[in-house]
Length: 304
Ligand SMILES: [Cu+2]
Image (cartoon, rainbow, N blue to C red; front, side, top):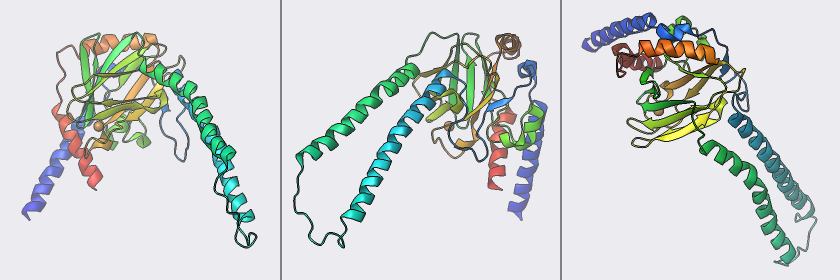
């Protein structure tokens, strides 16, 4: 009985917390943003990659297609060879099998041909790797810190930041998100202008997390005590909402710390920035009580 009443008490507290969530939904700086289409999201029954929003991701897809062709040709060739051997050299057709064990020409060929194939793969893959890893001069620098289990985002050039918590189902609509964006949408979004180089400094506060936006072609581990970097530039005209998720197993609520990025025009970004500076000017970001409890709400939802 005691357990039941304790559970009821927790339930009542959680209900209160999620109501509090609805109140602080999408107020402040984010309210200055125009309505945006969701562009970076997985499609139901979809396959392949999300539509690219950056040159990096366009290049990733091109490299993937290139490698897929090579893999396909090799797979077909090997399958053909196997089938040929099965049908032509089976015991029925080959009463007296050959007894030779070496063929120098063949052995040189199956050593050299894979080397050539690998050499062909080097230029496109290394070019892309260097493109991702050589960080250009930033127009905007954002520091993303992974916490168990939410992200903190700081606009380091402007001295403000905020925490981004996953929205519970009942707060999605109030924040302008669809129901199927549950597990992806967050209460505060990273806002960036299109056509500008965004450098994200990524670190972890407790364990290793990873900051990822599939449509941008970026993924960087957030390691405590280290400041890693990634960069992206959203193509002009691709203003929209892009979702990502923590991509390094970081504990039991790993799946409840998504990332929401809103790419907007420079003018909309400037408006948002002025408003965000004022909103977050009070000093260092502190975790709201409602935010901290939100995780419990989500856990309860997951358990049910
Ligand atoms: Cu994580």
